[in-house]
Length: 83
Image 1 (cartoon, rainbow, N blue to C red):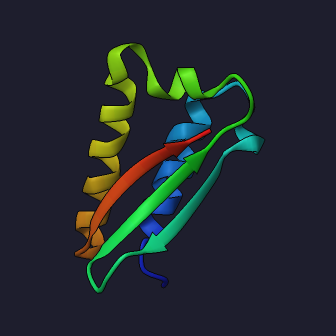
Image 2: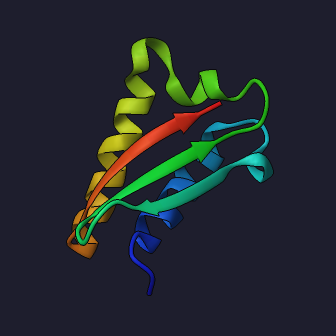
């Protein structure tokens, strides 16, 4: 299994449940080092506001869930939301 695969699957599912167009969700895993990955999340037009949420609460929760998934793999993950 590739590094960050669990993180990618979890983010695909969670973000896909929040947005209006789940088919437009793209999660890209970028390796930053032996134990670190960055997950870039892209959504369809108009859905990024739903993913970020009021005062960034939803985004913060998504980052927490992603880190919990990364802990299963023994790595550290950060999540970036891209327009």
